[in-house]
Amino acid sequence: MGKSLILSLQNGKLAAAVQDGAAVRGEALFPLEEDHSAEIAAMAAGAKFALCPGGVLRPLSAGVYALDAAALADARENRFGPAPANRVMERCAETAERMGIPAYFTEAMSVDELLPLNRIRSHAEVHKYSRGFRSEHFAAMEAALGDIRPEDGNYIVAWIDDLTSVGAYQRGRCLDINDCIGAEGPMGFTSSGDVPCAQLAKYFAAGPMNYEELQEQLLCRSGLLQYLGTAEPEAVDERCTGEPESAAVADAMVYQIAKWIGSSALALHGEVDGIIIAGKAVRCRYLMDGIRRKAERIAPIIAVNDIHMDRWLGRQAMRLGSFASPVKTYGREDAE
Image (tube, rainbow, N blue to C red; front, top):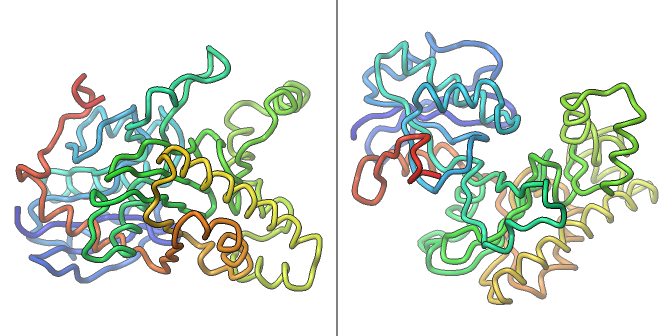
């Protein structure tokens, strides 16, 4: 479809790049919470469309969608959950409008391909959501596998960052994933992961917090940050080397991640071709050594230092609108 503008998230900032043919060039970083659409539009002059990863939206099938008013409203209002990717969608829509070009998003965080059994929870009023770092997972698989397609094998992908997202992929389809936006799964650098429900209910009922404040605490002020006072992997590594108390917390995080990797292997019937680790945990030797000791018996572990989200999106842009990547309409029944 020609030259395109690629927008993504990089270390908490908005990354803008131009995809022209097979090349992605001119990446620049901007504060995510500020409107820099004029500058981005100038650097991407001549682009035919804009593309970004999808945020936390309604449950969707995999693929590319037009970033229309309904999708933008759901992202802007965090209607289905908060995530920085929702802000990326806002910036993509703003810039595309300024440039007079269409905007699209791909592989939303809420793509739902779960096994039927995964939809049944142990409490009938609590719904299971499929919310995870899907674009990061696919970019990590592409970086780790080279010429091998995700559709050619079974892989477990763990994005271990502020939040931890572990997915079990059977021939490219995500059969199981922890709802990290709902604080399900292993702890992350700033997120709690699983906590005992009854204790959490008591804590919530006894405190002055509203739901949004509790959600922020669980996702942004828990995990390693709450225990160690830092969410930087290099600092965590240093603390774990000399402080047994810090090492015990990191060991607990490793244990939780390894358990989710193990349960993902079960979802794949034990047929796992590789375990791919990405996110800032890759820069923490203590965590990575622990994960390898516990999980490498399941399958070979591949650590990806840089997922190159702009390059992965650039390749999605090249396919956009083709038979292999048709554009879907957000909100239609066949997209849910």
